[in-house]
Image (cartoon, rainbow, N blue to C red; front, side, top):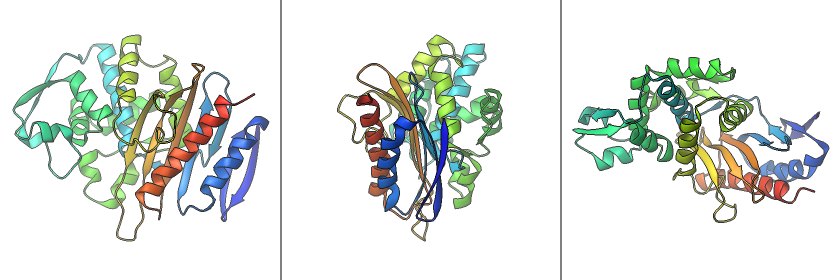
Length: 296
């Protein structure tokens, strides 16, 4: 496998590719050429092992992508018997912070209700609920526990130091939770191929990711209707200089022939608007689909 280095708008982009991925590389170069953003990409065919990366080792803020990692740590605890999917978690009003993305808070504004761990996972992964995320983090012992667990799986390009509430306090805090596109793909591959969780927990996780309701205009945006995409999104705000730190999506796409493509796209440090940032991800996913579907 060759590594080539090309210069795009004075920024270095590293592609890891086989000779056959030249067409995909060319299309991605065209997609990125006019965009004022730093984009990290990792693509891998699970069955045929074709790979391509753009800034694959770059450090990008995860934002809510880290809820996938949290879910992994929670389900690992379930597999070990220290937690149970049926166990109830009591919500108080103080658990349900305002001014944050939380379908859970909208449904139970006064708290005073018990929610199963399985339901909490659904809110956190499928709906990207920020309150649900922090409740799960408290349940398993905090961000450091998740970081230690992910690193125990051999994923070293990963840091997690703060929760959602802490990320909302100051702009720079979000950068304490970072990973790389290649590390994200490596973790997705491990989990999807059954090397991390029990079969039952693995099945549940991919059901939750397939049910993701956020980011419909990202990986799924330009793919054929009905395409199965198990994914997790992440989004930052935009600062007073017009910079968006993170518009992210990562997951696994099922192709018409039943094979799969792992794809991570992190759009960072962007001066583009939200629609353009999401379109970058959608066009890269579409180009990836076309390459793998029509590959000789």
